[in-house]
Length: 95
Image 1: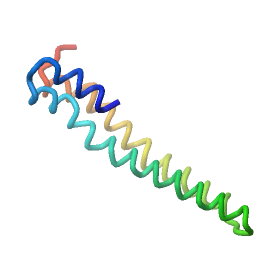
Image 2 (image 1 turned 120 degrees about the horizontal axis):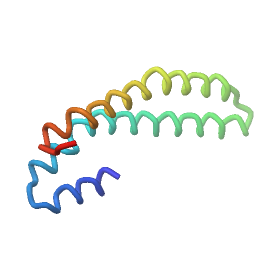
Image 3 (image 1 turned 60 degrees about the vertical axis):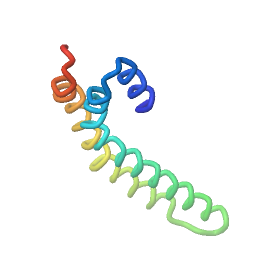
Image 4 (image 1 turned 180 degrees about the vertical axis):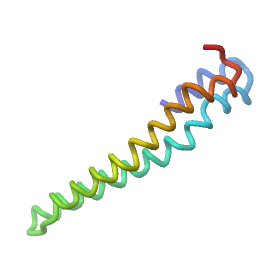
C-alpha cells in the first residue's frame, strides 16, 4: 500500500511532496508491521513445535496479544493521527 500511495503521490512530479505525504506516518507504521510479522512467525513456530511435543502455545498467544494491544495498536493510532492531521499540512494538501 505504501508503494501504491508513493506512486500516486509522485505521479504529480514533485518528489518532495510525495515523500512528505508518506514519511511522517510511515516511520511509525513500518516498525509496527515488522513487529507484527515477528509475532506471527514466533507464534507459528511455537505452534509448529507443539505438534512435535512442545508446549507454550497459549502462553505465546497471550504474550503476542499483550504486545499487540499495548504496543502495536497505540503506534498505529499515533500514525493515524499523524496521517490525518500533520501529513496534509506538510504536503500542502487541503482537507
